[in-house]
Image (cartoon, rainbow, N blue to C red):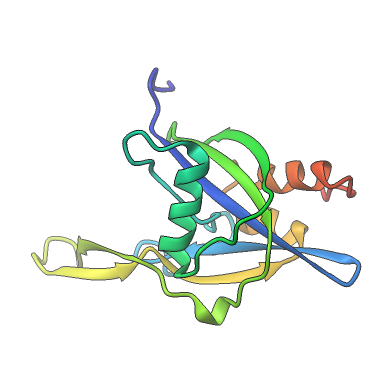
Length: 162
């Protein structure tokens, strides 16, 4: 059952052209719960809106917070919304730009770890990012977010990897 007022988040699918190929940037969530997960676990840099913030403003802010790099000004493509299994609705935008994954400096979150230890530990929201081909991105991304890759390819008039 889907909540009638689902939580929302917004994020950026960064893309670049390398010769005749297209690559997209995906991010792996940090923390011990995600450490050994790969396919289906990655995400676009995204997060929750602040009061009064538009989805585009949220996506820009969250990209900067989660990568340590401000999103450059310029055009963006609206990739629409997807709904995760949790019920959360994610609004995606695509921006053409470059980013050096080695420069990643994510904000952090705290959680008790190990469970029931009472020890509060700090972890990065994103522990790594990588450029990859659209087909690889679709395998690695949360399945609902893989749709953003298809929508980007469609918007650019490129063959989808469906």
